[in-house]
Length: 112
Image 1: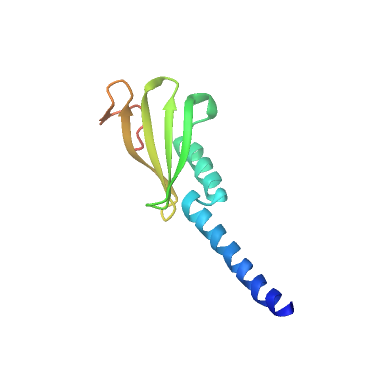
Image 2: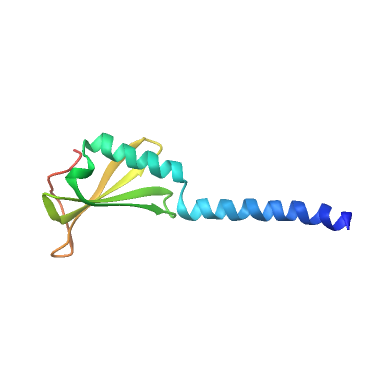
């Protein structure tokens, strides 16, 4: 009986670590999501009252958070930003026109 316990406990611990690692790999780290969220507000100089909607999504392929914002004064445009951990910055990826379903070049809330 002791031999079974000595074998099964390390195996269960190993499997638990693997499951946790896969979860974080697929969904991102929760405290990084909070940091990305705070950085969006700080770098862009916005508040919740400026936004119609906000969505943070983990991109497992790139390993970065993408932030999708729709501002109240531009409800037809969705701004797509990405959080770069190595630069600790939010970068504008694209501006999407929701009416025509096309990406556009200019918008009111560009970073540059």
